[in-house]
Length: 160
Image 1 (cartoon, helix red, strand yellow):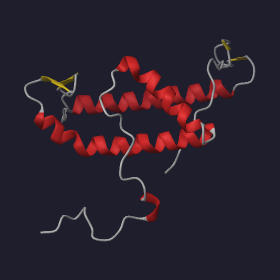
Image 2 (cartoon, one colour):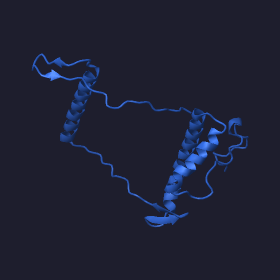
Image 3 (tube, helix red, strand yellow):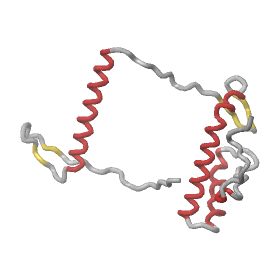
Image 4 (spheres, rainbow, N blue to C red):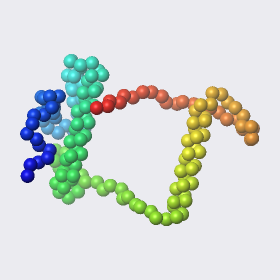
């Protein structure tokens, strides 16, 4: 039976030259991450802009994340006991939190109340964020202060 993941045709042209990813020849410990990252960054910046280098690194990171996902279950099955030394580093199995399913009318009611309260909180925050100046509540006389932005910035997203 033929493996569905391997085909006889050549890979797409955009994958030419990507037979090997630049994975370090040995495991690098956390204390050396910054130095290796700086070397990689410097090498990429010799031929790329900062934005191009960022996109290339982000692309490799996402490919490697997919590779980890493909290997995770097999790797878990190969760990002896709960901890093992592999290539000079410790590999441990860690338990995931338990997941529960509830069929309880009181809990369902409380969850509904919680959702309604969260919606009211979200609405009040939105009101305070859009308030331009202090105002007095007409019912209570209380002074309502607008929200203050304490943190703002930008990040970058790359869509592949």
